[in-house]
Length: 110
Image 1 (tube, rainbow, N blue to C red):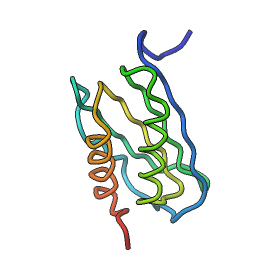
Image 2 (image 1 turned 90 degrees about the vertical axis):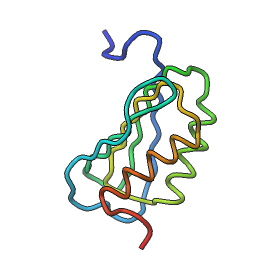
Image 3 (image 1 turned 180 degrees about the vertical axis):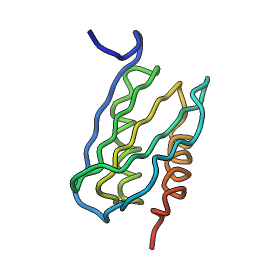
Image 4 (image 1 turned 180 degrees about the horizontal axis):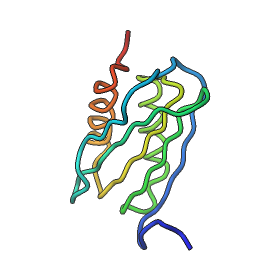
């Protein structure tokens, strides 16, 4: 039995390499609500950036892939787990929340 609520789609992405995110306390930004989302960043073992998206907007995997590719191009972090709980946010809001979360861990561009 899945722990994903009915009606949500789960998408997983992984990016290799990049700068180590380093040690940090988990960060949560945003809220789960209509047209918004929450993003949580946690440190992870290894050299990958793993992203899990749970979204109420089913069938937008290619758009999520493009947004995640853009995120990793701007913030090539390794040793990072990204969890996104989405309630229909636009790509611009997703990028904003991701940038806010990275700023909280001090992982912006050098």
